[in-house]
Amino acid sequence: MGLDLGYDHNRLHTDVSNRSYTSNHPKAGFFAGIPLQYFFSSRIALLAEPSFAQKNSLIKRTGPFTGIYASTINNYWQLPVMIRFTFAHAAAFGFYVDLGLYTAYWSGGRTNGATPAILNIYDSVRANGEIDEYFRLVQYDTKKQFDTRRDQRFESGWVSGAGISYQMSRHYSLFVQARYTQSLTDQQKKYMANQAPRYNETYYITMGILFRL
Image (cartoon, rainbow, N blue to C red):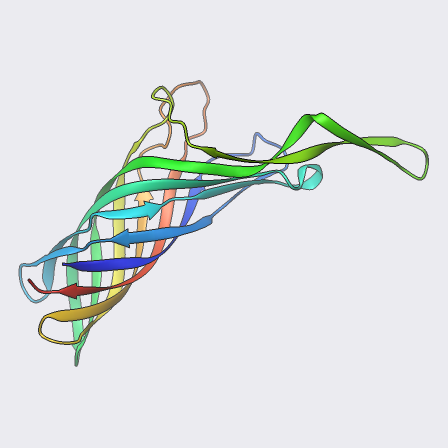
């Protein structure tokens, strides 16, 4: 068993084409896990990793709506189960790939951003005397309030990864790895007609330590 810490980069795949001047961006987050590994042989192992991952997202408005945005932090507890294949050894170094499935639970989150204050406007006079009206922007920061009719809190999908390990001693090894998870379940339930699905796609770069029990 061991400890695994690192960085993740999530993209929320959804269709925002029905909203003018709107773009969807990936956003960074934090990852921590406890890898548990059982070796069937020197080259094949079963790996489970109870872990915490932030699967964040960012929606920004552009053009005449520049400055309006919504930045969301989503916290997930997840459990990937994988088969690990170790392909090559060079001295104390080893190279491996992982392949498997995962399930996750959406435990909470927050959204902060800027939105127009419709009751707070100001005027700007052009050189030709025309008057433009502008909404002032207000900042907000709110905790996620789950709606059982709308939010799909359980997520599942597939996971893959690759990494390099270094055997420091008979009992301890260090590793650096990259991992990828793709959700196969929508972040929302089917609660309205013609809704755009929302799927998490997450990349991870992590490092950690394993020790033999």
